Length: 299
Ligand SMILES: Cc1ncc(COP(=O)(O)O)c(C=O)c1O
Image (tube, rainbow, N blue to C red; front, side, top):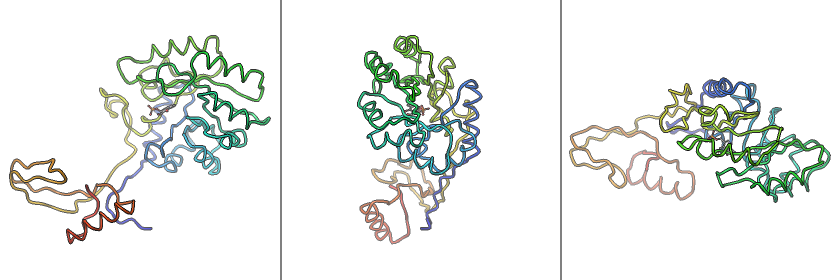
């Protein structure tokens, strides 16, 4: 299907590689999972993989089916399921395809253990150190480690996720919780998201997990992407498709949220929502026929 609307999101593979190299420059002792969840933060999983397949130490994402697609596309690096498995069927693919998985609760451990044969398996136990979304508490972690004891085919890592690495509260309080929970743990550790990679080098450890910074966006309110030496990966281009002459007091668009204070000539850029559902398509065609002109998109 050809797409004729003038709006285009262009993905700069070179910028994605530059940002990944920034991660490696900042965390030279760590390996880095390129986080490509949510369709590579809206940039397109295929485009992100194309850019990083010869560069990234590994890839981290949410859906088992997307992880399998990476394997099918010939990606050989470690792949991590950031939210873990959702079924025993998912879990069966882990050892078969060499996919690593986060395990954040005992139900997931049940699935993984029910599915696991004798093949090697890499699991990252997730600790709830204060984000309070996913992860074991101290007792849960002890029980999980106990359940995994003696399974020689299971390689284990510990990980957590920071809630405020980009803010004033920082990471020290969660690092303290992590340390208290991990105790004498000597195995692999993964802690850092983008903000921690950029501002908290003590968090880098064995694997870092950069997401937002890979795409050229700053995680901080007080520092621009440019100031952090990150390059934008997505460039949005469009075209002017209409020109209107306004008089003072004229309002523009739904709800009249803009009011002209002086005579103005304004341009209308094709940059609105796309008509994808039947209802939207119907609305778009009504709009076209009411206008009698080929005005596309735009709320
Ligand atoms: C577990 C985990 N690690 C890493 C990331 C990447 O985070 P960021 O985009 O802040 O770098 C995410 C994103 O939500 C995540 O859920």
